[in-house]
Length: 120
Image (tube, rainbow, N blue to C red; front, side, top):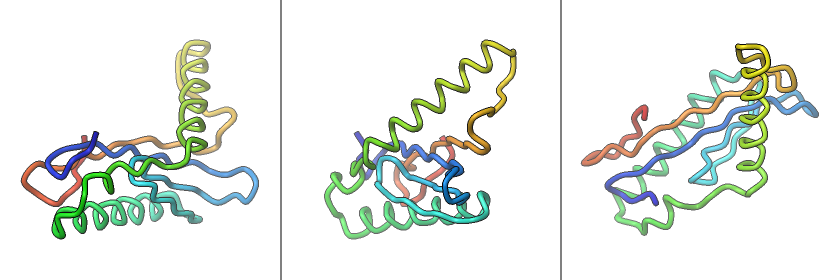
C-alpha cells in the first residue's frame, strides 16, 4: 500500500492496435494518457504522476489518493502481455514482441522525505 512516506507506482505503456495510439497508465494512481510518440507519452505520464504525488504530499491529503487503482482491464492487459513475453522468451530464448508492437513496463518509487518519484 502506498503512503506519503513510501510506495511504488507501476507504469504500463502499450500500442493500441485499433487506433494506433500509445496508451500509458500509472496503475496505482489511475492516470491514463494517450499519444502518438511513446517517449513523449512516457515523460508526460511520469510528470502527471509526480504532480499527483506532490499534491497529495504537499496538501497532506489521504493516502487513499495514492492507491486509486486503474480499472482491472489494464492490470489484466499487463498480466497477459507479460505472460506472452515470458512464453516467447522461453520458446525462443529472447523477448520478441510478436503480438504487441510496443510494450513498456516500468516502476517509480515515492522517495522518502521528498515529493519525488524516482526509479525503483
